[in-house]
Image (cartoon, rainbow, N blue to C red; front, side, top):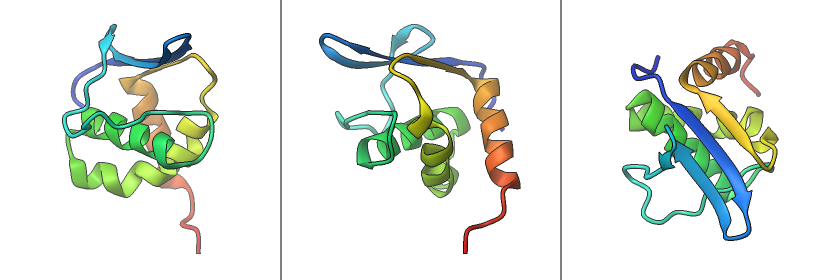
Length: 103
């Protein structure tokens, strides 16, 4: 799936949430000061899901398709501090893809 091996991480600090990729502040290409959050299902965790998937997959359309499931299965379950590698994202996407569609 993704090409570049990266390490994504998040932390809640006294100054607010911090999301990093490879130790640098995460700047999603299309994220215009969007609010990132995690640990529950909602708009801000969905924004984080989209941004992570766009960065990882390099495909905005595919990221949009997978973002809600990724948020529910992964981002909503993050603790206050979290770390996820490219390999972790690939594995999570394989598990999500293997699940039967809700209907």
